[in-house]
Image (cartoon, rainbow, N blue to C red; front, side, top):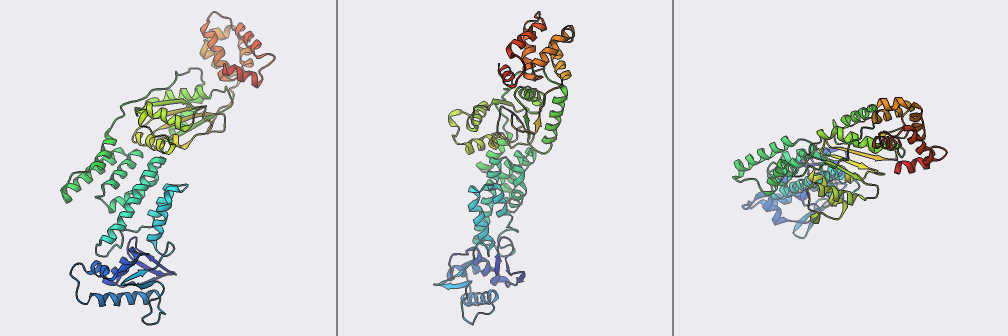
Length: 473
């Protein structure tokens, strides 16, 4: 089967065999027919595109000879004067027949058209862009027809960047985006997307460097200043958040240091390569929220652009994002209602920022809630399996928790009562915290009294249902 390629140097292959498409005008004729594949290209139009406004008298004859040679190259066994099945005369023009399986341009267009509704739009755009080996018909004289095809590539790269920014996948699209931007250095919409993608990948200084380089080139080559879109991208990168929310609940000292150290190390490891997501799981009352909030306070200084907190137990992602965007200073009345648009606004607003998000009681983490910026952190808590599992502390660790909250002297004075409190709380940190809080509020209250009250409240033993009620308060 004949396979054509025009996304880069023109090529013509029959299976594994490269066919020589000729040189000069014959190769240009083939390239123009490929660029218009599926449509009739009139003879007069072909002549003008090949020779310009002042063609020689022999132009039509040269064109006919080139068409005949191309036909015999594609279908060498054609009878003389036969038009064949691939390159036909239609009216006063010519039609080259190809489809997505035989011409890279049509394959590219098919992938681009299907990308917005694909399960992985970014991946589909990247497959399309990977078909390009350079500018359209590279090596031939410039033509508005080839420029138009190059414009399709630029548009696909812009769409890929937009999809990647919405999905928080800027790093994934950067190699392809850089390659297209290198071939189209004065395409301001494309260069602005490259700037935003670099910033979303944590490369803000490099993104601003692109603005200055493009601005200089626009002035030197075209004598113009940067347009509105390029300036808007620059302003987005320069803008500092007017609002830095600080929504974390109060830190809780009722925690074993080893847990916090281990979780902090896990977050640090993830942040080295992108946004960190720590999903803390465990049974009710095991201390998931306590740990999440303590961790958030620990790492808050490394997220200078704000800390957001939400108990998402009864909230859908739309409500969560609307709340977060409002907290970041976005006017509520201007927020979209659909989840994809909200997520796009969320990620665009966080471009170049490092932010901390705590999602408490998050049964399932919706990917739309994730910031796309490297250096940001998301901490979730859930009873379903996550990435950081909490288990019950030992009896000694539970006693240490009470000692940290009530003081060593008071715990040492009533060891039996302390043991009963630990047992009747089932070693659950949340239940232990509630019991300790009662002792802190009434500092003269004997611990034995608290143990007795727990015994009365729990009945005959620390069953799961009774403990859950105790934790819930």
